[in-house]
Length: 275
Image (tube, rainbow, N blue to C red; front, top):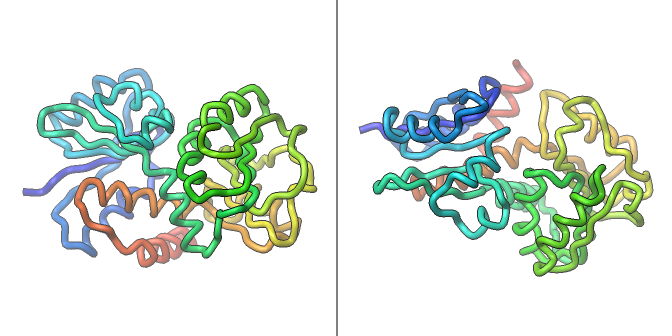
């Protein structure tokens, strides 16, 4: 019998997740069906019930704008999801309960590893203090960076987030004007670059050895990646690898199989180029 999964969001038709999971299933000979389902903004709780009880789904991925809301509706959470305050992966348990996990942070860290970027003893700048940023802080800190600075347009949000995770290491937060010195790794966790905007940060953050990572991706360089390249940084990376790696972790939670991510990522890049 075919097990059913889906990604939910609003909007959702642009999602690459059905392609990614279809490739994972093909690779590992898993009999699954994975679709994209748009959920009305105001009815997440009843939609989850329908997905579980009527459509008989085994699990779902969750994208914007439902990650925080779904976190509050889960019956149980993984440790990383508990800290993240948001979930992107759900298992509908056989007893009808909802188990929530967050694979975004591990997805980011695995993609950085794939690019041979070491986080240990590095100075990291994380731009943004929303759900995307919150979901990656704890996983990043497991690699023992020298310091993580969270920069946000509204300084108080960044300092609150820094306080929340302060038990994990040296984490500071502030507004864009509070950022000083240069950073080894600069991660953009805002969606600003999709609106062709870049954060109003001092140019002193960059050195020629800096690596810049945008969690967003597009069929061409995002505004953030373009901005980083103008400052001649050593490496720029978009979020497509993170997307594939977080999906692989979700697939592992559901099927207990680790798929080959690199083959799928390569195929995805080719698809995006030819679209």
